[in-house]
Image (cartoon, rainbow, N blue to C red):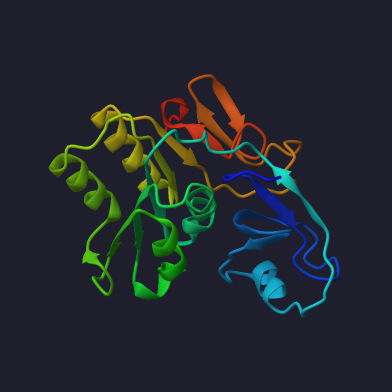
Length: 223
């Protein structure tokens, strides 16, 4: 059974145009069904959106590692489409996540009802103030940790844009909390062969698709 944080490489049409598969985090598992969340950004995701019910595509997975399982409550931070990876974790460990979710505007906050249903508490922010508080979600996280006497043994999990993840790592480190990030990188093969998704770590370059996508924040050298 796939675990939260893992991903699949999906053929995005019922032909081979586009040729390369695209990586998608597991969003939700229900019985024998896997669900993936995506945003239309280019030819690949447009082709995926145009598939009809009953279409057949090639899929490779589950791939990559997974989030370390929390022993109790935890913090989950997502930016935009990063909710896809975080949602699978919150679904597996229901009502245990303090969920911080940010985006540029209200239209980019996705699946709010589903997230609210499985989280312990949900905090929202948008850059333009159209939903939740105005500002960055990392500011909300830092203020929350400085205001409330939270158990520092609670781990922090994050997925989203690199600047957000970098700041989450800084906040968690300053608070003395363990932090794990699911990195978003362009992938061509998903199997570690092409070396197209390497990131710099304290022990050299590592492949996001093979050694990740989840890394201990202490490993990452942010550039």
